[in-house]
Image 1 (spheres, helix red, strand yellow):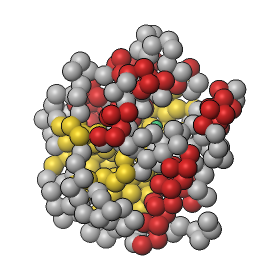
Image 2: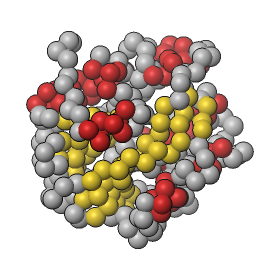
Image 3: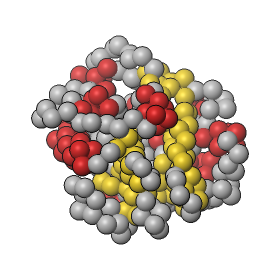
Image 4: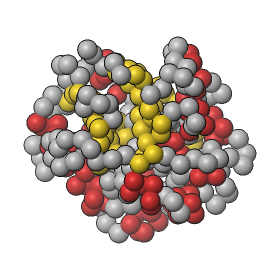
Length: 285
Ligand SMILES: [Zn+2]
């Protein structure tokens, strides 16, 4: 039985070029460079993924919310929202778009998995909170328990629904490719989450094993296929060297089988999904 993936675009964002990539090095210096970089990239999308599996509908990430444009949505000292330019329409939030697709977010979602709690991946929390099980990696949740730290790092805990407490994923999945452990999302093991830390502690990516091809949803472990292929890590991550190791693993996995790569912030993901274009990692590095 095939698994159907639908990409939901919850607005676009322009970021500073130094956020997309910088050479690995001292984290503070990289962030200083980012803060003094005044240019903006062309818009890039913010995707959430709806995965229609025989066991039910799963969500991978929740995208951004239109409320992010409202005054006071972020605390003033949340740096992240000052250094980007968001474009999201009033009906571009996850809840509205799910309804548009004929999926009732209150009753039709089996589980939602959040790669990490940055605001552009967790913006739709209020659309599904209390309606379905919401999963986060335990290492990530532990790190972002400190809401001041989480806010400084690009999340927005002040917008999380009251009483938000995600369920921790358990390492109950089989080894897969270079990963010794995985997190079983569907009970048949065809949807698995794997650890891809570095962007933030406990960051997760998703593997979907379909009949003819495997999908790898990178979230922010790679902003684009080209950046991954050249092992160009994002510019303001928590740990550049851990991020590089995660990218190396993803490439290794993609060499071992036919994988369609679906980053969250690359328009071309839509075409690649439609054409099932397999990623052939280059041999360099
Ligand atoms: Zn992120």
